[in-house]
Picture 1 (tube, one colour):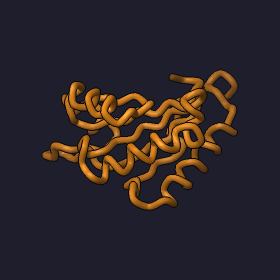
Picture 2: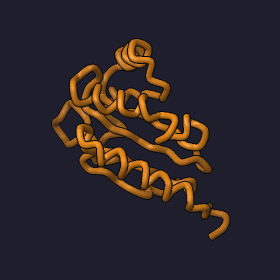
Picture 3: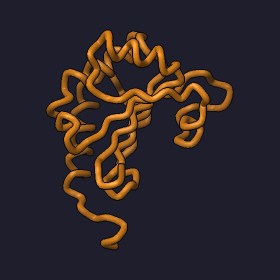
Picture 4: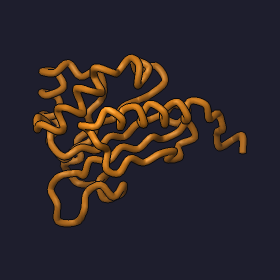
Length: 136
């Protein structure tokens, strides 16, 4: 996905109250926050099964991609799944076009409207950054 802005949004569990608030906010603001997916890829990640995530995405008409970390591989790499825990922590990463992490929201405050404003600002900053590994 190099050359695109990527938002990795780790979250604890599908269909729970806080996660539903967060994913519905992403859905409802998808056009403005993520450019309708044209230049920003949103990947929502939890330890739920792929089937559970797919079912939830269909039921709620989420327009973005869910990834299952049921094998608990990605969480430890991003320090979102502490040892001994079964669910991811709520953390969002904005990754720039150059593949580098531009901003980390740890924790992402899903019930706070300013968290989405701050996420939008981080995405805007990442859009303005045009450096790529070959131009350095």
